[in-house]
Amino acid sequence: MRRLRRFLVGLSLLLLLIMGWHYAPWLKVKFGFAPSALQTVLGKMPEGGFSPAQLVQNARDQIGVTVRYDPEYTVIPYPNGDVAQFKGVCTDVVIRAMRGQGVDLQKLVHEDMRQNFSHYPTRWGLNRADANIDHRRVLNLEVFMARRGLSLPLSTRPADFQAGDWVTWRVGDKNLPHIGIVSDKKSRDGVPLIIHNIGLGTQEEDVLFSYKMVGHYRW
Image 1 (cartoon, rainbow, N blue to C red):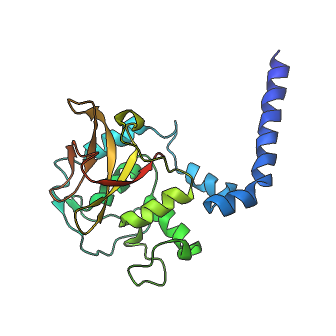
Image 2: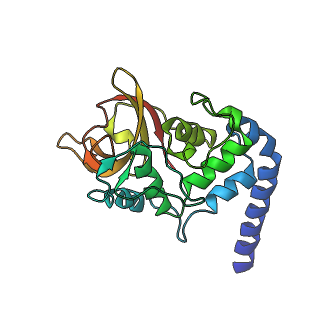
Image 3: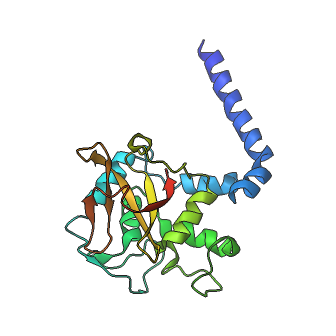
């Protein structure tokens, strides 16, 4: 029985390997990455795998620590660079929470933008990737996640959102990009709270359906 089980496991791994290489060109066209690039992302996961619950806790731990919203351009180290913990923008909530899971979005986004710059927005007048700021822009994170097939349908049903999901919006008359992490806590109406920084530092608030939702992602 053990020999049969080992044989079946080995056969399954072999088939997965063959299928991965067979569909590599399709993955490259469809999502902008091949199996080797996917492995690069998966290789960033901490031992034991990615934990949405821990991601939420990592975001919640920023409450009371990050107390200012500061969009100033800042030169930071690479990789694993960050601005001072007491300040940041909405994307920094996600970046810091993901880094606690062993995922460095600064490095991943920068590497993808260097190789596929034309796939990303050009509204800032840049002609090359900038590791200081690219990962801290909502529009770039939206493209990055979509290119990896991690987008989910938009919804007005609270049940469609799980703790650890990312949500992006356009806020106000100027449609300012914004991002937050879905919490494991809910409002009295059963709507998941959002951990984000929209101006007063990192907060946990009932704002999931308060703005124009444009993106929903799950790592």
